[in-house]
Amino acid sequence: MQKTLGKDLILLSLVSVFYNLGINKGMTLRTLSMVFFGIFLTGCATMSENSQPDVQDHLLYDGASPVTFENVFSAEKGVDYVALGDAELAKGELDKALFAYLKALQNSKDKAAVYFKIGSIHSRRDNSRLAEIAFKKVVESDPEHVEALQALGLLNLKARNYSKSKNYFESAIDIDKKRFSGLEENQAIPTTSNEEIMLIKSDIALLRQELRETLEYRSELYGQIDSLKKGEDYQSSYDPEIADLNEQLRTLSDDFTEDHPDVLLIKSQLTQLEAKRDQELSQPQSAVEQEKASEIRAQLTQTNDKAKEIGSSLRAKQQEFSNAQTVTMQKTAVKPYDRSSPVWAYNGLGILADLNSRYAEAIEYYQTANQIQPRSAQINNNLGYSNYLADNWAIAEAYFRRALNYNPNYKRTWRNLGLLYTRMGHYEDALLTLSRVMEKAEAYNSMGYVCMLQGKHDDADKFFDQSIELSPSYYELAYENKEKNTLLRSRSLAQQIKDDGLSTQ
Image (cartoon, rainbow, N blue to C red; front, side, top):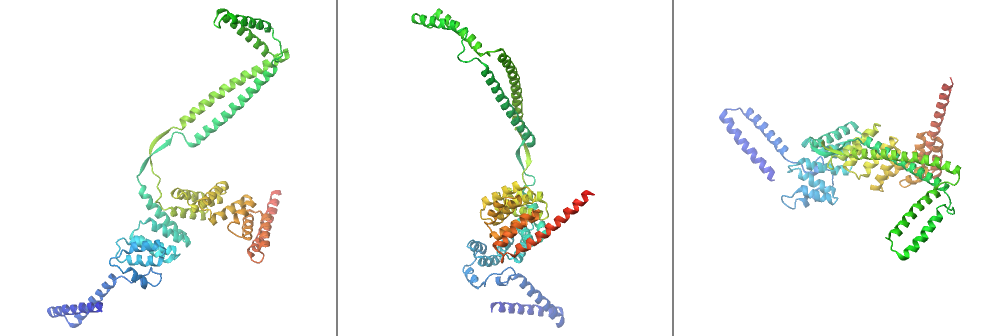
């Protein structure tokens, strides 16, 4: 009623104005009517543009009836609809949150932020069409909105619009990299490359092993000499003199202290005689043994010289290693990403590279994503899968294990790990792994399919048969795969016969 009255007043005012204009300017009634009609339509169009549609009529609203929400949210004057939407979103009330954000658009100064929240709700609901509309609204308002560009890339990746997806991902990354342009940091740069350091460490390990073997051989030679020495029951020619001196020493000890000159003299004579006796005992008993001992001593001399030479080389290498570990501080550009960078854009580019069999490129993207978000099961799974496709099986297994460590319930990784074990020929491990996320019939069928692709047709047949035996009525796919395997085996055999025939011509 108030709106109608307002419009009537405006029309009456316009009639009065145009009437005066017509009289003063001598305008004809027809001309006056046309001018009036044109300005009237313009005024209506202007009012239409400035007015906001009701939420229930909004292009981006797909929630429940908003009547109840309107009553709740309009209870207070000047309500902050963004804050209200955030609160409802935190409670999982997506309809209420969406309604609040759309109400916020009417007066919000940061429409890009609000549209992004709306797009995120539609993404959670798998409503890709409305999510894309909302995210495009964000980009229209803020062309460098990294999160919206990343979100558009993900939507197009899901829809298999790979070219658009790639463009959105690359735009998000390029814009994010601007934050790091011109930034530098002090970084320790080694004076020697990692490859050279590894070679030095390898040389050190070899020299240590060689020195250890040389010293062990020297010990063996000393043992051989000891075996040629005279026995403990051998009577030395010096024994009588030693016994006589010991008796004199006992007699003197009764009358004199230990520092008496006569006592010291006898002790000195005893030391000399005992040394001569030890030397006599160390000599082989026979001439043959003496000759053999001489040969062993010559080998000992050579061995000792070799040990000294190796020791000298080892010390030099250790010094070289110590020098190689020194670093110089240099100004270098910082890495063009951090924890705030668009991790799923990097991950998405990795997926696109995998789809085009560019596994090294994919691994590089995934590794960057892994540095941005290092504890992601999804990213580590993708790293494992790229390495699996690139035949880097040991590396693939390590990444799959790491992904499961972060999320033990990540079914995709259990499946990938099972397929890897099948490809490696670890069939028992493969069955146990696949059985964690699928029925045994399906596990055997999956193992058979991998074996079929590898050309292991006998193993494939065995697994398809086991799948059929477990679920003959349900698992018809195993029958189809078994037929494919038979056909591929025949083709492989025919090709082999053809190749053998060509090789004999």
